[in-house]
Structure formats: structure tokens, C-alpha cells
Image (cartoon, rainbow, N blue to C red; front, top):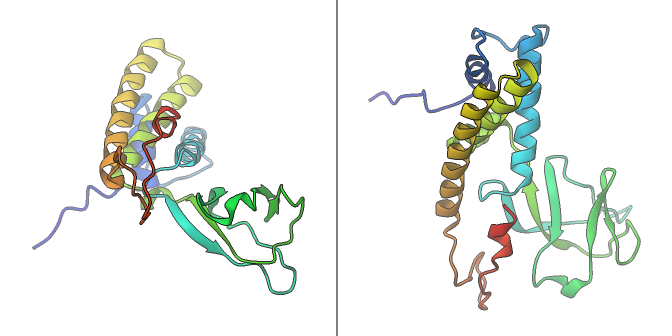
Amino acid sequence: MAFPTYAVSTELDAVNQILSSVGQAPVTTLDLQNPEVSIVLNTLREVSKQCQSEGWHFNVEHYVTLIPDTLTKEIKYPPNALQIDVSNNRHNNKYDVVKRGVRLYDRIKHSFLFEESITVDITYFFEFFDIPAAIQNYITARAARMCSVKMIGDKEVNALLQEQEIMTRATALEYDLNQGDISFFGFENGQSSYQSYQPFHALKR
């Protein structure tokens, strides 16, 4: 039995959807020599990075162990990481890490050197093809609205695209909540101790 493949979205699919939103003809390849394609593709990738930086269930991993280099004692910043933070209830506030170039820097010790492995939460960046469909739709809708501002500047079109963006964001949030099994009662990520619901995690969206 053959299964449909039209649920799978690529950057080309998203670019053509955005082009149609601003009254442009579809394309068969992502030719950056084409000014419209270049604007749309760059906007799509920019918006994808912005949206993924929020941190969703599909791109956040908790309690990841990072091991310092045996010679330099430094920890390289993963090239596909958007955010890294020391995991809750680990290290007892011994570390406060931030990105400095391609390395992790400890703001408490004011040093790039780590004498032990550290446990962190990482927000990863994924290529468009690897993003869940609900999030893809939100990214595409948001990019379409931004492209309409850049390319045509029509207020009525922008208003219609803004409605679509709001609707797709609501769907993306619903998907994220379902996937994450979000609860008022804590016990996430294998915790054995109770951690109450923290409203700011929802409000920050």
C-alpha cells in the first residue's frame, strides 16, 4: 500500500507557498540568482532560526552531558545548538555557562576551563525538512507575512497573512503541548521529586 508523501515539506515547498502568498509564480529550484527566491529563502531561514530559538518539545533535550577536552579542558559549543543552560537540580549552581565564540564559558569561575563533565539542557537547530509539520506551517506563515512587508507592502495582504500566522501558531502550540504532555503537576523528564507548575514558562511565549 502506497502512502501519500504530500505531508512532507521541503524548503522549496515553503518558498513556493510564500511566493504564492505575495502574488509571485512558483519556481522549480531554489535559484538564489532570482531576487524574489533569494529574499524568500533567506527570510524563511531567518524565521526558522528565530522560531526554533523559542525552544519546543522537538528541539529541546534535557540532561545532556558535555565532556571537556582531555588536553585543553575546554568544552566546544555544539555547532547546531541555539541555547545551552545548566540543567535544573544539577551542579548546585556551581556553573553558569554561556557561549563565547566556539567554546563554553563559565561566568562563575570566569574561565573556559572545566575540570569535569557538565549536565545541560540544549535547544537545537534543525533543518526545515526535519521540523514537525505543525511548526513548519507556523514558520512558513510567519515568513510569508514578513516577505509581504518586504516585497509588496500591502496592508490588506499583511492583515490576512497575520491572521494565518496567528492560526498556525495556535496549532503549533497545541502540538507542542500535546507532545510534551505538559502538566500542572510537574514530574517531567524523569524527576522523582515534585516540581510545581511554573507559569512563566507559558507566559514567556
